[in-house]
Length: 94
Picture (cartoon, rainbow, N blue to C red):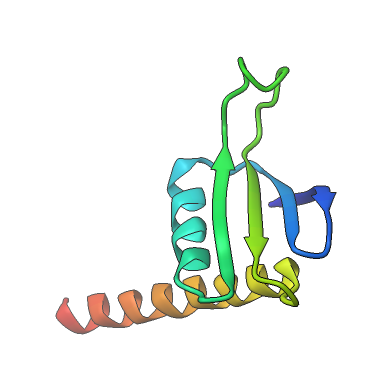
């Protein structure tokens, strides 16, 4: 997975996540929106309206004083924890 920051400010971050699709992007966006310090999280995968963009771009807006990169890290940890909990439950049910 390749990441490339396309825009960054105090409370907003846009990052291109190469090689991913709607499945992963929706999970990550959902994890971001679970955090109280995230005001908005969305992604765009629309090459025809985005000047040829083919990789998804995730945009995060945070509340004042919260670094969007920290929010992204927290969301990644949340995804990892939920994935592990699902794996454990699945293996216990099998």
